[in-house]
Image (cartoon, rainbow, N blue to C red):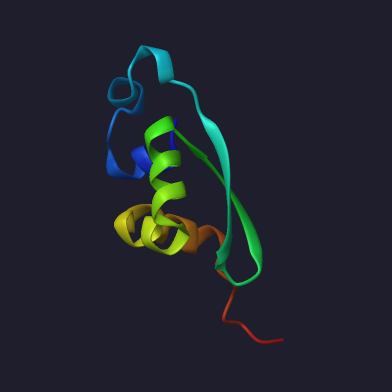
Length: 79
């Protein structure tokens, strides 16, 4: 399932149509302090990421941004 559509609660295969209901792997490079984050996106979300860029894509998909920050954000604990 598309990570962005799943965060929004949208059925990605219906919104993309039968000819484009495949997932593409995308990498976010600059959003999480030097970490590469791999996400799965549907056709429409991958186009939105390409056109808008990482920062705008994540501000438009706030729930996805929160989920990714919980998984990949650095810990505030200092050794």
